[in-house]
Image (tube, rainbow, N blue to C red):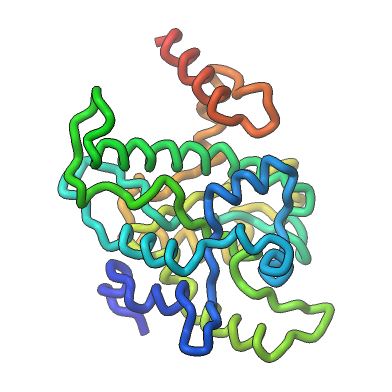
Length: 268
């Protein structure tokens, strides 16, 4: 059973994210920088087993994961400071029972958000180091270690149980701890939950509000998180599009978001 302390500190969480004595890791976080590059180059969601063989650089190293866990331990001294924490989870509806995102639609929705959060973390790093003028300097202890952060997407980060074929004993052993403890990632007070509540392109009955896992993740994320650590990507995008078009480029990268913000400012 979990205690309230587990949702604020990282002892149990680290057991999921770092290698055990046998060198196996239950959950491997994705490196935000590498994931953004992978997505903009046309990469699609694949099972962790395949990604580890084909694109091992997509994952956070053990050293990086340790630094991200230290980021999670920080408590900003200013209560008004949104810290943009080092671990982000994605809640989304699978578009198909066998594959969550066969046409890359959901990764495309995520891409500009990854870029935005890295930009905000880079700004915090510079402010903590006194290298950015125009904003008040932060205490060094309040700054993140680096702009890059860890991303949890279930299909890509956890060994998948395959219905159509036999699993190896190691895959089953690696999956069981996640099944019993994944709630720590979503319920932790200082992880950020990203929510894709609108299914890109429509998915029939497979909508966010009708999926059990989505609702469970949502409930877990409301236990102790501050509201600003829960971002509805779909709602945010819709609000922006009411005032101005996102960039014409496919992924809505930095230039496009800046253009939209300028249009908003011009309209008051």
